[in-house]
Length: 180
Image (tube, rainbow, N blue to C red; front, side):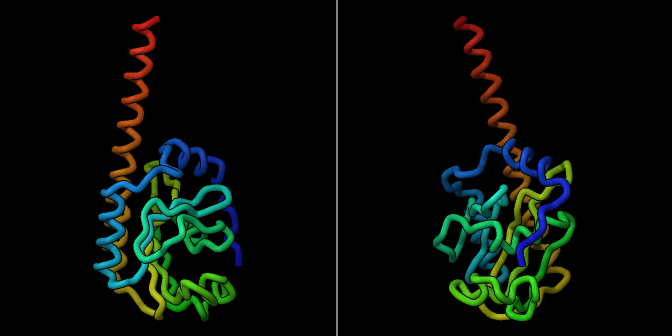
């Protein structure tokens, strides 16, 4: 089942673009966070997933070799609907939203998914920090809160990255004015 488009999609996509992160090379800080998520939750897959208009792109991934998937297949496209809640799918094979999803019935054979939305200060979800397993699982309330905390760390890094880009743009503009 394809996720419906959130009502704030235009605003969400504009904010995602403001981070200028889509398609950028790997960055150690994000790789460290997805590695920690994989280790903490003992899952073979952990992703920092960003959802744009037609794809989910992985800024960082552990245990998954593809750089992106179509948005129609993305668990994360469902998770961004409520930026305040961790979306947990204990067994995707029995969840009507995902039971026929190619990512469930074929490789990577997803059974368990937990995704904490990457929520901006404006309340938009850019994507998720998620952990994935090939066996059904559950999370405790404390584990859900820990995933939220890791997602907040991702957002802190994204905000710092965006601030540095804005500062760099200002310096470039000042240099151009000096030359002219």
